[in-house]
Image (cartoon, rainbow, N blue to C red; front, side, top):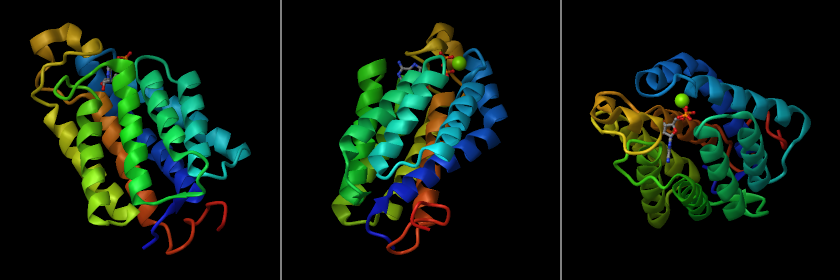
Length: 225
Ligand code: ADP
Ligand code: MG
């Protein structure tokens, strides 16, 4: 098991995000149609397609550079609430990662926490408001616990993704207090928050990219493959 994740992992993660969001595009549209305006799947699909297009010409050499590329592209291509929120998350994660060539478990936990803090700074949501924060915060807590325990990066991201998935499911009965869904009041209960669902998909993609890393190297298709 690799003890650090490099730019190859980060690039693989972003490509996996594009694939998984494309695969769940309709589901995310339907979740957003129930309690929002139905654009979440389309917005994110457009954004991550643009990220992969950018990666075809521009190969980041650190995880931080890959996160920054994602941030800039998502901010410019994704409309609605989610573009600036995900853009801020990736930008804060990029700042936390700095120019390190690879991230160990504590650095990954710190980057995830920085990303979550960026979403909170931008959107002012708290846990229980039925937003993507309800997926991110349990993920950040699971990541911190995994890092404290000495888990590998792949274990850490796997546990973060599992926590995010549970967090997304936990939004089902919540009444939205932030974002467009809050206009529905009590009628927002009984539906999963689309941003929490997409956050869980994105974090699972990070874990799968980490699980695909060979000991001491990048995944197939990464820069050092
Ligand atoms: P819009 O609501 O503008 O159509 P999207 O449909 O792309 O944007 O994204 C909706 C998602 O954004 C919600 O499901 C929720 O998870 C997230 N969201 C909205 N407002 C906030 C906020 N203030 N803080 C955190 N997340 C938010
Ligand atoms: Mg929407």
